[in-house]
Amino acid sequence: MSRTTFDLLVVGDANPDVIVSGSPRHPEFGQREQLVPAAGLVLGGSGAITAYGAARLGLRTAFAGRVGDDPAGAFVLDALRTGGVDVSGCVVDPAVPTAMTVVLVDGDDRAILTAPGCLDRLAAADVPTGLIERAAHVHVSSYFLQPLLAAGLPGLFGKARDAGASTSLDTNDDPSGTWAGLDEVLPFTDVLLPNESEALSIAASLKGSPAAQAGEQTVQDAVRTLAARGTLPVVKRGAHGALAFADGEPVEAPARPATVVDAVGAGDSFNAGLLAALLRGLPLRRSLAVAVACGTLSTRAAGGTAAQPTWEEATS
Image (cartoon, rainbow, N blue to C red):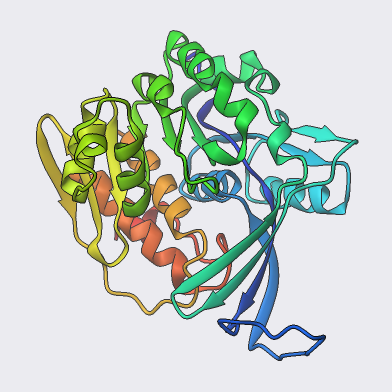
């Protein structure tokens, strides 16, 4: 009998997103009221969006995170449950509110304002050992927004590997700009999932890396540097598709044509697609193509989850 109850356990951030579409690039202060084309309240957080997308792609998915004991937290947990995600491993914190994010969308660009609430209280010890032991793969999101989780991540990933699970990490952006701490966790990370800017910053931050010494690098240099740390780097490149580096060779997938309504969460949908494909045993090049399709198709509607594809849509 298989030891796994879940194909995927996602550990990370979850919060409501208020998406403001057609936002002015510089909102006017002085109590000026400005009208925008649309706004919506949707499920947000890189981890939550990845988990929701993975469940839609047919993976048995669990999510472990931390929310407040408030209406925002209830909204998040209800949205995940409705999407078929097990949230029994989530901590409901009565002392601190749920994180909240406002996303100001201007064309294909956006500004993101997050009130972290209980986000930085999530620790590796909050993730039930029994849940880790029942997962085939453990994915962690938003490394730099969750310092307690980041500090315990080598141990958490080590525990997952000991149980027979593979691991992946999407650091997302580092608001501090320091990109510190990844030297310790990359040796335990099977798949690293940055975007192009993040890949460059991570590679430059690593101790003793050629990129750090040279001060200048291309994304191809960055993926080589990251691969040398024992991880499979898979870089999201937007209009340039995706780039990975495995077995000493670059592997690429082109972008797909799209009319973008909203790119919020597209990278998280890419993550879900890649993990769903790899866990189904697809080769890397085909998995990259599925991931690009998932990221692209998710941009058909506002918010991170409204247009996430099914497996049939992503592979047709």
